[in-house]
Every structure is written in structure tokens, then in C-alpha cells.
Amino acid sequence: DIAGWEVYSFVRPTVIKEPSSLSVFGTKSNKEFGSRVWISHTRIPVFTSDETTGGDSTDYLGFFYSFDFVSVIQIFVSLLAYLFSFDLICGEKERATLRLVLSNSVKRTKLFAGKFLGSTLALIIVILSSFITALLIYIFNTVVIPAAVEWINVVLIVLATILYGATFIAIGMLVSSITHKTSSSLIVCMIIWVFTILIFPSAIGFFSSEFGLSGDSRE
Image (cartoon, rainbow, N blue to C red; front, top):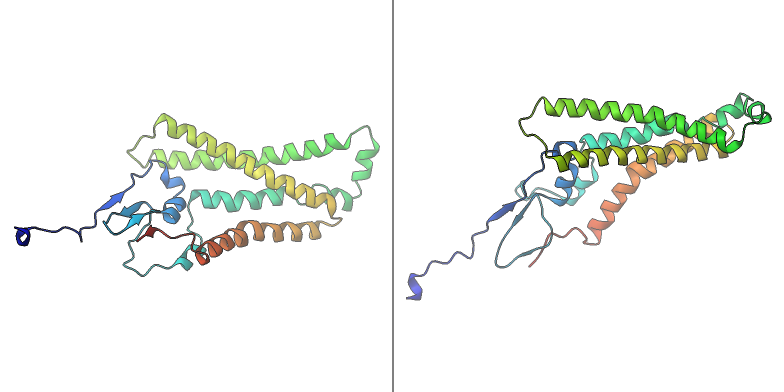
């Protein structure tokens, strides 16, 4: 008898992705790509989402930074890299010591490599101390022990952070070698930093939402 059948077409079960034990270091990806998806017979999920705001969420909220450990590393490592490198060359020019150094039997490649490696080493010390402090706080405040694969991921994150900082040091040295004053070099570095760290990621989020690249389902 069809009249006695029970229809469950309006049941919408939610599938939640299991969080990683090291997700405390980077929660931004879960907020952007989501950690749950609703299953329905009329809806084919394409992207996961965090639909927990009762319909009050908006795409424009994605333009604001959701700070986590990775976001702090992204902002401050690049800023420190510029502060370490913006006056490496033009500072020598202003003090009139660059010609004195180059007048000796010192090659320019060795001079630039020494300045680059010295600044990178100073940045590595800051990065390692930050990661070690964060890991100690995490270990002594959790009961979840990360697996061996996750510790490998931590090492890869540290190496990627060092490479990330070294890239900005190289950019800072390039700007410092082109300019003739430390003030001009600092201004140019800050303009590049604002564009690459603040404006460019927000612009990508804006255009992806405007052109419908962040849709989460197909009806």
C-alpha cells in the first residue's frame, strides 16, 4: 500500500570531515573550503562548506583574515624578511662603505651571498624558535599525540616557511640594490608587502566569488 509508505526525501544527513590533530596550526583552509557537506537527493555536493551561521554568512566575510598560526607566520615572516634586507645594499651605499669593500679582493657574488645567507640565518633562528614554542605549547596542552606522518608535515611546513622567508629576503635585496636610499627601499618593500600579502589574496577571493567559482553544490 503506497499510502502507508514513509518518505525520507527531506532528510539531509551531514558528513563531517575528521579534523587533523595538527589543524590548530592552520584552521584557515577548513574555514575556506569547509569541513562538512549536506547530502540530499536533489543536491550534488561539489565543495564542502561550514554552514553553521543559519544563512547569515556572506561571501564578503572571506575577505577578512581569520588569524591562525600559519597566517601569523605568513604575515610576520615576510615582514621580518623585508626588515632584515631592505638596507643591506643601499645602506652600504649611503655610508659610502660599499665601494671600500668592493675595492678589495671581494667579489660581488660573495658579498651578496654572504649578506643573503646572514639574513636568512637570522630569519631561520626566529622561525625555529617560533615553531618550537608553538609545538611545546601544543604538546603540553593536548591529549592527542600526532602521528609520524604529521610530524613529517610539520618539518615540511618549517622548510616551506624558511623558503618563503628567503624569497622575501631576496626580493628585499633586489630592491635594496636598485635604490640608493634606505628610506626609498623601505617604502618600495612595504608597497610590495602590502600588495602581495594583503591586496592580492583578497582580490583573488573577490574575483572567485564574483565569477561563481566558490559555488558549493549543483541542484
